[in-house]
Image 1: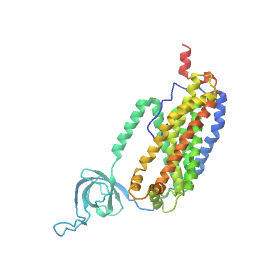
Image 2: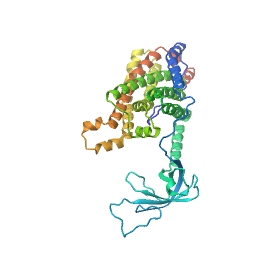
Image 3: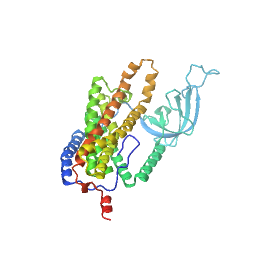
Image 4: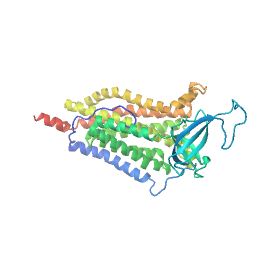
Length: 416
């Protein structure tokens, strides 16, 4: 399946025939140790019996409300009145909002808040459904609440429903399997990756174990338990290992700390340090997984179809032909990864562009250098996935007897 970007490929050509005993045995010998290592790693790394750390910074309890009225004016505390005709032009304006509480201890009540209007704060207006942080004080006291953000649940649910409907209409049963695999991938991230990292385990090791589990579940569930899927799993694992090694080497060589704004906020909330560079590397591994899935599945399917179309082809001919197909695909895959990271880093790049420093200093800054290493290491892994997966697929497909390459649909047609 494809995590992280929006283009896919139709790889199914009818139900695949079972692999021959020789190929099954070979793949089991190759994959079983990796599957066992993944499961063992998850068992060892999971924080059994440990409670997750709580935030050292009090965020408040989220409660919901609707803005009844909103008016901008001088920043006055409750009970204060403005003295003089006009406020000074240097005084920053504030937004006074009357909130109908729809949640929490003050549900059904009206609370008035005064919020400074800053360039970095959202623009709230009457009728907006908003989220407030409640600090546990007097529910009728405005100082017990802080206006935080908009409510976004409904549009997110609608968009998720449209996404699921599109996948089901186009993919049917395979689309349903892809959605289930996507859900299980999030389960692995939420129930294993996040708790293990928060418990103090090495983020890169946790990410490798989690990515391995996601890969096994997603690929086999979406594309079926077959020889070609197993080869794609092998190719993905090798490429992920290469990405992890390259990222570790060059992040250390570039003295990256991993201390961007979000990581700094996390450390402040935890109240203690965390392996920030390991967290950066973990993001590289998980971020590249979805694009790798697509590349490896495409290559294995291409090699199998070439062998089925011309059973006389040896592994060298299969490799050369498959590699020609891969070259067409790898460019778009790398561009997908680069654009995904560039889009995520756009605010950082804009801020760096107005900072007035030279291009060399700009590219060498922590935030930009992190994105460069993240992008280039992932791209090298994607490029390497093409020849690695293609040669594995060619070696294994060339050992399959011809009748094992035919799908059940092909066999039925041949007997008609």
